[in-house]
Image 1 (cartoon, rainbow, N blue to C red):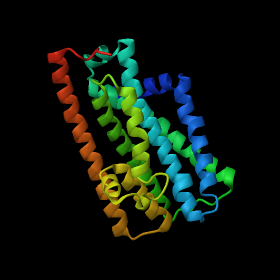
Image 2: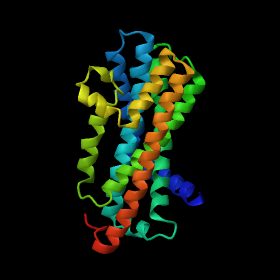
Image 3: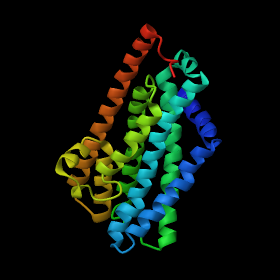
Image 4: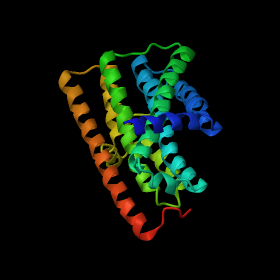
Length: 256
């Protein structure tokens, strides 16, 4: 645990020192929030809360995780420090997990700032039927984004196209998971595909929080979200194990 928290703390300091990351934390979410706020300005308070406030905040969170998953691995590879992390006694997986935890904490800060910005700028009421459920689903969203980040880091570690893959993954997932508009307007196969991704269920949880729902509904969504998160962690673990074996055989870790 000490390794994970130390890695998270150091990475948070290093990340904030980069102007591009500060843009992802502060300016980009505010621009997206203003855009979606204008789009949903004539909608009800409930719909405005779901997409212009919570959806925008979640999409900003996702952008930070997606950007950091590819960008951090790419940067370590470019600087030549990736092999050092790979052979560190603390363990490559723990260090990467700490980095993603640090990025998630920055993403959580961006999440809160996004909500405050939209509420004060547009003067709309934040419609929340269950504040405890909101806190729990925000915590689950942090965990699920960390799991997705680990999964992407494992895929990007040996890839020469990490930056391209990041840009390819980011926006399609925003669309099919219903973060910025209702997913039911999409072609039905895309709706079914979206159900395979945990952010879809985070948005379903937010929808219950805004519009209300029974305890059974909350438990149903939370159970599936937790299940998908555990699957992501499991896949990421086995991916890192496979990567370690492949790197020792092919010596391809430093290929850039």
